Length: 143
Image (cartoon, rainbow, N blue to C red; front, side, top):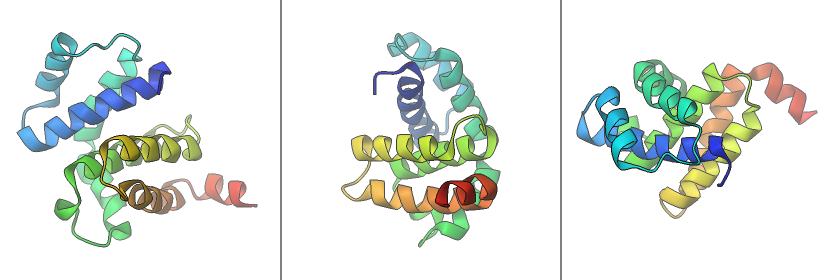
């Protein structure tokens, strides 16, 4: 994960995880990351977008995720929950990014930070979300 957008996703995942478990505002976490983390090599604007927009749209993103889950969202591992919300945001709001790229990047994050089989879970959930929010793109790719 050396490209700037992938690095932004990686840092955004860490920041979103912190937002979920700490209850601090995304603005406070963004300021802390700017101070404490090395954002060098990351697409800073994209990191800031993800950290601001995912919490802002969390309820809506959760509604995309819930029908695909095999358990209540609060029982999903917090790291995987953050990855799923991040992926759902990109699928719903960043149509400029191909859905396959969103899913592949999310799988890589799950392999790095999630549980042993977390990447398979993330893949199946986000594939379902993609079918819901991008049905034409998914159908075109499957032909």
